[in-house]
Image (cartoon, rainbow, N blue to C red; front, side):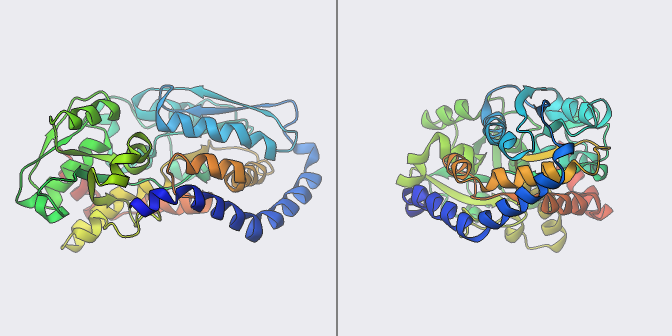
Length: 357
């Protein structure tokens, strides 16, 4: 972990150069040809609205605003790209608007919380208010800025040395609201993996419960890795905290030696449930179009998003946020959504039951 953090800047530069040498030159040539062929269908004079489904501030908002800086450069006509926050029901309000009311000309792009990918199947957000009035299978996914799993961590001087110790030793993990991953992941550990975690909920946000940890109120938390690394990189580098597990469908490239929750499960059914829940972390910061966008505009937007992800300056800026380098393609996000929508009834019902607190 320490070596990873110390070499982060070098990794970013290396990744940027590799991206340039392997793919960017070819992509740029392909992009110029595409622009020449569709110059009459460009976005000149348009304004692209980037809708963020949460209030200003926080990782989602920051990532969206970083994408907005570069996206217009790779669209024909170089349109202005503005960010609009449309909070409400953990992005359901924005997604409902995007699906049902937004202009269908490619000038509106949604940037929701990744939990919306599970909402039609699990209805977790709806328990706190809001209705999912959209069909994910009819929307077009441009991709995701990166992967960012939630990790369970405790103090480095704790007698909890590995994840299985949570099954026999007391541990107080901080959480925000019941719909937040800090609460949901800890709950899944108790319900599916046999841990004895005491969930201390009610903190307004990550910053507040990090202070609570420093003051000895809690022993750790379940936090997205990027948020933890950005807020307290010294904790990771110095061993002030210890990571016990990550909760994604697969191991993050940033944490190749840390087991996933699914890997820690002994039962196949439980593995399926934790894999389903972890799918959303594969596309942590997804960008999506509503239905009905003209077919000739989708490739332009898809190309612009992909080129933004390859932009060396963008890669460096995102790398400083501790996201895994590179992007998750639109096709990969679409497959993830398909896997969620096609999960077995047994897996969905089991996961709902585990989260029926």
